[in-house]
Image 1 (tube, rainbow, N blue to C red):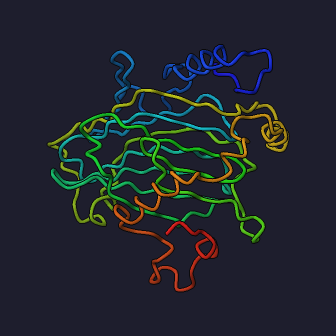
Image 2: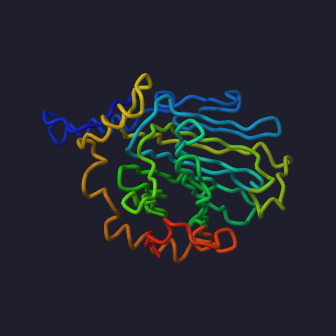
Length: 292
């Protein structure tokens, strides 16, 4: 299993780099297992393919839970007509008051761009959707999708470019997801009641099966002991010696801030913060998130 990465003083720098590169190269079956429709998986070398057909979707989940760190997976999305399908990559804790960080890739008809929807759930409450069009065709090649999570922020990244930041604003009385261990998931399923043009375009099963491909599985975080309560794991994972607690990761750097501004200006097509029809009163965290 991948062990928690902490700062070992006896590791010299090069040994540390070697250790990290080896641990990050952990293969799918070391970190994950299918939890839904294992017969809809095929493995070719280092690539895991997961298919949706008219009988079933499919999904995998991490074998361990984590509290803080970074998750990264390279995904090649469904080619051609993917209307009605959703491929999701997300982190989630358990229970009705769960926390969740979502990437949802909304399929489309051939030639139309894929949409990426992100969402953040805190204590069981979501309704924080943002949607954007990517600056590349995500069906033609693998691209990396990452979630960085620490006590100060949750950052969604595409090829290391931040596309969304959810900042800790607890000092404003706004709850922040920092007290529940989370599993990592991905799934593909039929969501043609809403996924494509609000559900107007349905899944064309003659174009199936729909296949999403995965490789480059990395989880570098504080692995939680499932036999322990969250409060114990939280104390252990916030001891301050995890790499995710470095002061440089408490916010975006200047370059990342400019990248995020570029994404928002050029690629964002929906932001719940500006949807006055849904939210006549601006959601409280939107008043304090300054990423425009």
